[in-house]
Length: 312
Image 1 (cartoon, rainbow, N blue to C red):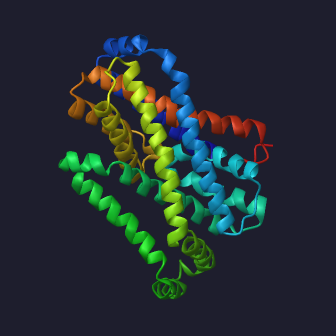
Image 2 (image 1 turned 180 degrees about the horizontal axis):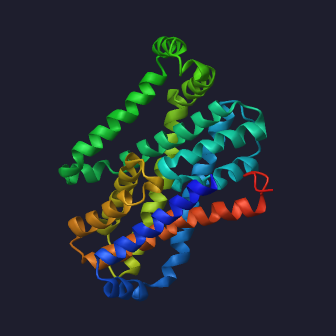
Image 3 (image 1 turned 135 degrees about the horizontal axis):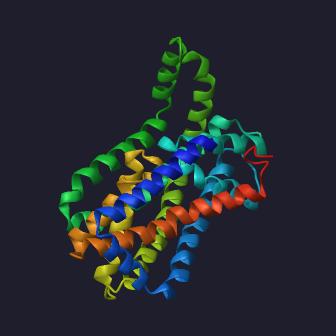
């Protein structure tokens, strides 16, 4: 796990370096130095607001699968999982399933179902937030429709129990898969519970409010870089951050690194017509205030609860 995390952190550094070098380094540095840092507490506060609501959703999901942990314990696992998002393919996030099993006794495979449901509900939430933007800028429609279709298909299949039973029985006859069918059944049972209409609607609603908070935070980043106030800039900020989050998640790159940054910077240049150096500075600032702020909080959690990650 530590080796995978190191690869992710190194990749993140290279992405940030490439983003700076592809623009004019001096101009990007000048934009960052000119940033109105008085906005920073509000930006980080909105990021924490996002984490708070998503943590509540995580706790709700745990209760749905029978993992009756305290709210504090759920938040501890949730925040400790932030650094795992930058592991290659986000494979490290499966470790949260192990932590859930250790703390509650619920099988790890059901805990992994929580991780997957969390990602899918977040994906639906940010897609819904970007709907108006997609209508205004139809060039983004194909990617929007494809990702939305995939997410809805996953939810639909999870609710068709006879189809799942057929697939699991088929897996039992495959030499390499049959050893894991028990875990796949546990994973499916967790998914079936978590993707029920009531749970999904509540999770997506919480996700929309939480990610809207980060979108407003991105608007404050743009304001801090000198862009004018107004609903137009606000709507572009929310749309850009939401759609770029989807692109980063769909890329399966660790933390969406590279894909999300390229999407944010490119959309800002295309939709707002701002200089590349200003778009690069905005991308750097929002990624530090969201992704890397979360990674830092997660590592801090590891330092205080070393038993959780096996560092004792």
